[in-house]
Image (cartoon, rainbow, N blue to C red; front, side):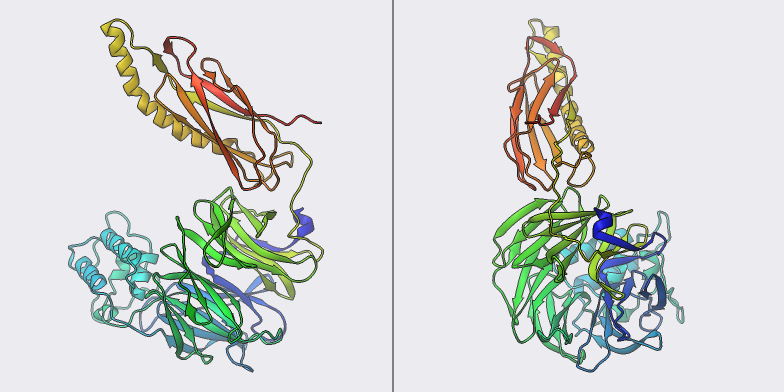
Length: 578
């Protein structure tokens, strides 16, 4: 299927990429109709790929001797009719505009985000760490707490948190000597503090967090765009067409970390803003909506598909909401999401959905109706784009673990919206579950009673260890394939929790369908050599894709006396043919 759907254009495991999902974009920088890939790396480098090679590389240095800041976001746009395409890089509180001229990126402009005083809490924290009354580790913890409390952090603090902690036993930070030059690439947080000056904690310091663009018209040949900038102060700034000043500012309750925009400026536009505190705001035609979406867990990102807002969470769920905040659907991803991007295909079969990169080395495509196509990568994806590249209009570009770069071209006759189906029936899954030892009755003698109490006391640790083992067993027993088992059928994930201290146990079993087909009529057997299940065999009801069914079974002891530790098996059987 992968060979029919995507054609491999490049797989370079040694590309050496180090970038965030928001720092990878494609654009026609030279006006010849061929799109280049622009990447902003964590060390401040900007790399341009054309075809399968890196054709240009530069480093955006900080002011004076300051080390380069890690780019928070990167985008490309044409702000004014007749202007050349610009690459906009957000670093700290500075927007840098670059243009491709004479085969290299030249800086054509800069804009500093309007400043505000550094918070007294942050200034006091750095004063304490420089005086030696606060450790570097405690300084980082305090900054993280400030960020969680929605206190804006300075670009220096952002750079500090982006660096690794100092090695154990390293010396404390020391004040910079007069005329001392800063290390452009400090190895850790302690060395960065060596170059902290009073000016870093004086004024100005509103770091940017994310970027987005708004189309200026519906004309297909007109790609003029306006720029939105999210900041650590909890504001979204709309810049004027010259990228030199702020046209409008929208205040939110949290710090924006990603934005998804649809519509055109002046003819109806909406920005979906995901904040760090798990609240999603909507800005519609310049007005912040009162309707918000409160997530129960941290989110990887949010995109728009059709009229829904799709959110991927760190708990392995993909949740679809209406613009008013009502939950429409929930799909279990089967792995932790690492990145996501919108996917729009207008030619051929057409497709309107999204792609989610998962920690099991796959990219899964979804529509508002559920999962569709699955693609397996050589390594876990960290960033994913579905965008024009080169002279191809439909490419899947992926940055993988280890710095690899994968470029795939969607086949012209491929149908991403077609659900994977198979007539093969599920294979039998055998899940061993260890039942701890137990005692029935306290006995008639004092010695028997003491032995009984001792067994019950030690049983608590056994049960706790067993529940941890159950999670590992359930995870390992799921068949590979991300939605399909090895025979090509639907995929079921089984988890179980053993409750009680004996001798009678309660087994709570959850069967989740993480495949793409309806699971119907799957028999489940409980096989035990000691305990007698209240229901030795049951028939599961129909479980749609992405849904789960939970049921419980009592495990009764057959007789009095000491019951040894033993294994009970939960068996999901193959459905017999008709």
